Length: 334
Image (cartoon, rainbow, N blue to C red; front, side):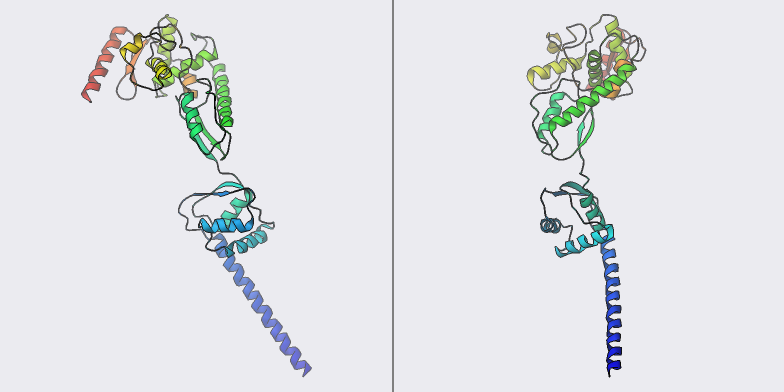
């Protein structure tokens, strides 16, 4: 009888063990399936985990945001992460990007690694410093107001990456540091016969070139016109500098009128010789390079061609013909 009981218990033990093994194997297959299965999330999304968030709060947040179908699944996924990664799941505080179709494995890896999402702030070639400051102060992803506008021309146009909560002053400092590097690098490779002597003057020249022409391919030729005029003691006669003076005086941009050209002021290069008082924008590296390496030419004038570029002329008579042709084309297209 004892032998029969032993055999029975042995069979029960074997059956129970087999069932447990089958259950473990099925559970493992099930977990592996849901762990690596891509989600139905169609777009990249951002999650924000505040400092001090506990696991209960995080599971609720992920459920409410649609990342988890149920709160209880969080504990299973957390346990699975620990088994697979062989380390405990430790979500980081911050803002993180979850790409479209991310699996639970991807989601938990993102939260565990804690690589912050990088926002973008773009400084466009030819933007004025005041415009950049206004845009920064309006951007609610940043903190700390900028109270003093940086000098014109000292901020490098580029795309800047940052984490939410970055100080606005830190972004300004990065823009200034980058522009200093660009100026130093381009100044070291400048032409030897420039009609100006300092890097400050080079930035002023580059800012005028930037505002006069948005085509980087023709900026060296625009630069040659201004360089030729300086060498021949001619006024620069740049509408862009006059417009900058209007903005400084009136706080807004408008069409440059004849009376504006006749009104004296620190940015009116029709009335004053040499450079305007300051740079009139923040120039790009290409504009700075053009200012420091003007294309050899005998041109002294240019006017818009109505196609996004300019027509260049050696003499004032030729220039007047180009101006007339531009006006006719402009009137015809109205």
